[in-house]
Length: 245
Ligand code: GLP
Image (tube, helix red, strand yellow):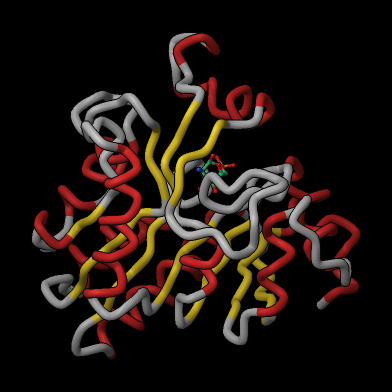
C-alpha cells in the first residue's frame, strides 16, 4: 500500500482529485467506483473545479457507486443517488446513463444485487475504486463480520454506522436500517483502489488498518492483500502514526 500524506482535508481532496482526473485524462475509457459519506465531498468539489477550469471530460467514464440505502428512492434527498447527482454528476459532462448506483427501492432487492454485480462485470470491471472507511473498518456498507468472499448483497447497518450517518437525516429513527452494497470481493476485483482517510475520528481505524492483522472483524484489513492501493490521509488521521510513512 502506498501512503500519501496530506497536510489537511483540503490538500487530501486536491491530491485525490488530481489523481482521479489524471487517470480520466489518460484513459480511453474508464470505470470509476465511487463512494459517498463526508470524506469524498471535497474531492468531488475539486473534480468539478478541474472540469470547469481544465475541461477534463467524463464522456469516456462510467461510474459505479458502492452502496445505497434500502427503502429510499433515487429522488429522496438522503439517497446516495441524490447525493451523487448534487455533489458531482450534475456538474460534469458525464452521461447520466453511465452512472450506476444500486436501486434502494427496487421491487426485488435480491435480484437488484445480482443485476448490479453483473452490470459491473459486463462493463469490464472497475478500473479505479474510490473508498472511504467507517470508524469500525467498514468499506462500502460491509460491516464487521462480512465475508471476504461477498458479492453485492443486502446488509443490516450496525448501530454505530446509523449513528454516524444520522447527521444527514432529521433524526436517528429516519436512518434506514438496511442497505445494498458492493461486497468485499466486488471491491477487491477493482484494478486499483484509492482510499481517502481524514480526521481525528478516523485515526484509530487508520492505525488498525496498518496493523498486520487480516480479519473479517475489520473489513478494510483485506485491502492489505490488494496489489494496487493508494491511501491519501491527512495529518489529523495520521496523528502520531506518521512513522508508518
Ligand atoms: C458510509 C458509506 C461509506 C463511507 C463511510 C464513511 O456509511 N457507506 O462508503 O466510506 O460511511 O463515511 P464518512 O466519510 O462520512 O466518514
